[in-house]
Image 1 (tube, rainbow, N blue to C red):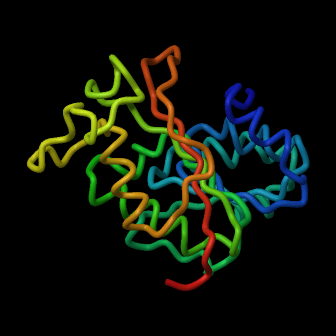
Image 2 (image 1 turned 180 degrees about the vertical axis):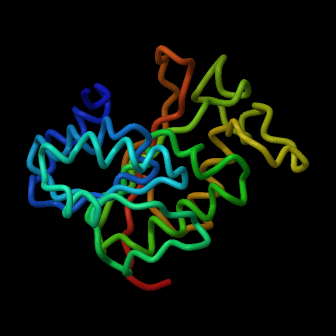
Length: 197
């Protein structure tokens, strides 16, 4: 198990005492790697099987009681992490929580709420066909955008940026389309600059 190259490069510059929430932990790949690097990590996923796999994977690194406490099942409707708790939210494969624009807005809004002022959100999503030819094109220079009725993902860069603005997050690293083994994905890093709207 290991961090994706992009996430590893990002986290290499982060102080290891930074608290991290692995949002949508899946099989625990990032949770395990971040714990091995020394980060204090909490992880959650809406799928009970993913939570069980992650707990099992990290139980050798932290005791079972800590794994039970730090890895939990959480839906966006029952997201009970306290406000301003984490320095980083890692939402790699954010589609676990966000298959529509409204859900993506909620993922980013919830992430903002649990971030400390100055905190960061790392997010990846499937890249929309709109952005596959030229990831630099925007609505302003004539690129097609998500049709208003196209509520489901994958997400175009313009759509992702609109959800980011609605969640009151600032761009820390311009979103880019990255080729991965499973297909092309958008990678972005956002930051909570203001503690209150």
